[in-house]
Length: 467
Ligand SMILES: Cc1cc2nc3c(=O)[nH]c(=O)nc-3n(C[C@H](O)[C@H](O)[C@H](O)COP(=O)(O)OP(=O)(O)OC[C@H]3O[C@@H](n4cnc5c(N)ncnc54)[C@H](O)[C@@H]3O)c2cc1C
Image: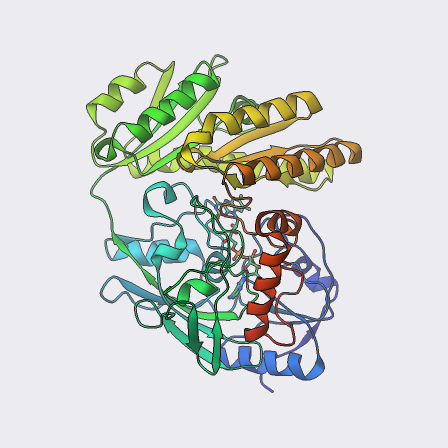
């Protein structure tokens, strides 16, 4: 045995939680430094019957890496980043997004997925099918994964490559595992809710977004893209939400030649929170009600410049430094929310749902009405290009937490009726199981469990995630 098995105690107590603030429990923890040590750890867990919880950087917000007893398998020390070859980069799962950005940039390339939090690990991002602002144009991380190496629960290693390992209809074989994929309801919107399956699929996609329930990702080959010669970031401030939403619809509908690569939204409460957060970032005038951040690669089309001119004000960032300031401005919101929730010692109630284009205004009305009637404090921000905002309820009391939960459940039901997804990018983890069941029905959950059983017959991996 080469991997060191540690008892979970005072020094390792941080490994019992993630950014959701959910707290778990575990007896043992390992920090493998190689695939062999992952295999060894899994074989030991199988022998002892320990459940295993996988961890990357623990920036997840659905409790996915929060353990429910047994062994924590933390992959942060497997963080090597290889060399770029033919716009491909091989990385270990613990590599941080910030490290990948640096290596790619040195080669005049970039990695399009940008889930805001650059300390996230690539293994965690693969497991949650993460996305971010630029996913409006570039799609989720799924589009940028060429191949995976995965260690299955009993220690078998499989390598799966896009374009090579594919299902035949719904039948598939991977290593020694042969099976039939279930038919599941997958909405035609941005989604990270449960297993991704479709006939003739690339089997690598089965593991992307599976939240560590099918195997441990131990190596990833990512695809990179040429760095654009020019990037321009803009923030337009509107006097009302209605006008801001009309601007989003204009950006989306005026044709692909003027479409930006990102469209982000900050509501009046987000701007208010930023005004109250001590920072030397840009100053927000009191008449700014709602903000839309949007980004271009290359020049901003004239028609957009004219339309943006109708807003109260528009900030433009063209240099790397100016773009960084705008990014920090955007990132300051989830960070301020997390701080506020931590200060209030409350759980975070944050939505992650998306709807089809035609339902954008309807879903915003649904949120506003529910929040106003319940009298809750909140902020709404997020990836408006994909009709995907995060409504963050900021409860003052346990009673408000309960009111917020009831509201959240009602929204989930309405969003399923609108053919949306109950999780667009954060995944289900341990906090949204009820919503996944609403979306997939009991039968869908049963089919997913059966699929998991093929890869993990003793149900050792990430118990409590998804179902
Ligand atoms: C301020 C802030 C902003 C954020 N913004 C975004 C955003 O814009 N978009 C977005 O998508 N997310 C966002 N997130 C959420 C989070 O950063 C992502 O979910 C991220 O992908 C998690 O990566 P991680 O390394 O921290 O994973 P963890 O939190 O450690 O784990 C997440 C899940 O992946 C599993 N896992 C981890 N490593 C492996 C592995 N090697 N093999 C198999 N399973 C594994 C875990 O078991 C768990 O289920 C944000 C988080 C914060 C704190």
